[in-house]
Figure: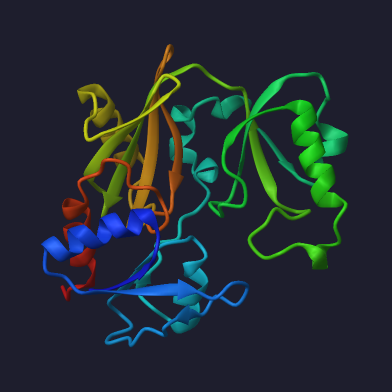
Length: 262
């Protein structure tokens, strides 16, 4: 597998794992608004290239026909097998930015908000109703042609759910329907990176993977423990998700194996 890396703090950690396994990689910068890479990578085999860095690398991979390139995923909230496990999935609202000012009551209520697509346009976080409405109006005040690529747009669909009290949050890395590594990344309100997971949480994650096989060749799944039990938070693109305290050598070995002939 040929590894093409955009220079970030997390990809530097990935480079350490690649070095330890004697796997070659190259560093590149993304040209803003254009999406080209500098320097242009010399591709040895378009069927065995993987890119890690920002989510926008998918455009370069697609334009150049690189495989597996970037492992794009479908919106997890549209995956019916996962609906019974989602955190507040049954109570979620799905609204475009255009709909929010007229459809969301300005009642002081808190909402957890995130884009439906895994596009990184807006980080998932809790906002008051008036903040959500103000955000929508700010975007709507711009003409479509004024909005930069990769930013919230008038037709961006958002998922809004009731905030829940979360005790622990974990991220797990899935390759070919197998969990290859994991990391704790939050305990209560504290950000804590440790390469550990509770036994029942690991089993819960395996059940999620088994419930929706072949969702993607590789992806990241986040789960949590609440006062009501274990729940699924979201999925993320594995090429652009933070590594926290994952075992990166295990991840590299699993992903690298996807580029080898069967």
